Length: 304
Image (cartoon, rainbow, N blue to C red):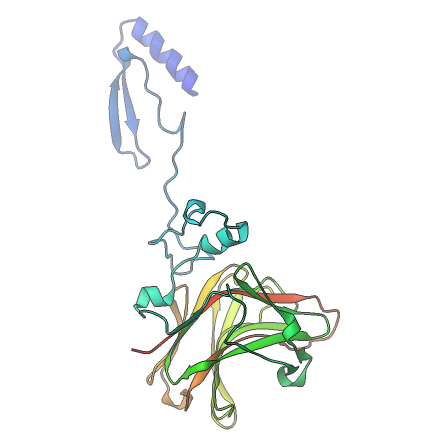
């Protein structure tokens, strides 16, 4: 029955001397109000207007259901913000630092002032494949972009100043669907440059070209032994990837939620490490399409 038909029926009953009560029920069937019909029908919720409750369920871009802190709206962005800046802020989710009380970072980069403090690679690519070149790195509107082309020209960069043994690192990254030849990484690398003995912690390695699955690899020992894990998440959207390295464990987080932990003491790196950002070339053959990864910010925290 439409609202109009309901109104006509009530008017007819009232004209015949029938007392009409209109019961207004909420979405759960609870009684919201009782309106005497001889004053005319009140509009029923859901007929003239619908008000949707906020959706706080977990989704692909919010694996932990981190709806406790709504993302800023467009009105929260400073005047003059671009659509891309709004996109990076909306649906931002939680950070591990906020959720687990890491305090203030000792280093941070929002990529608003170029690439000061970074060592950008210039030489052969991963395992000697392709080339790492500063030409593949760009910064615009506060976003770092590394681009890999069809010939294996790509890039990587290291945050060597402030290396530390144990600590926490976090970065906000997205990587559009890519060619199968390109892996997007955030990793910790031994400052002593003594891999494999010095270890390696790839706490965000996107190997899946659709970017729907992300891996972690912890390398250790003189024979480059490895342990690994994976999380299913849409890496084409912005997410906050973090690692916490303590004397007892190595823990990985995404949007503040733990998804991997290693407590075996034999996998522990033996010395200081630093953060690296890399788009690595693993040639698979065939026609290759240009691929990229984007980084909004990175932060480094002390352990305690």
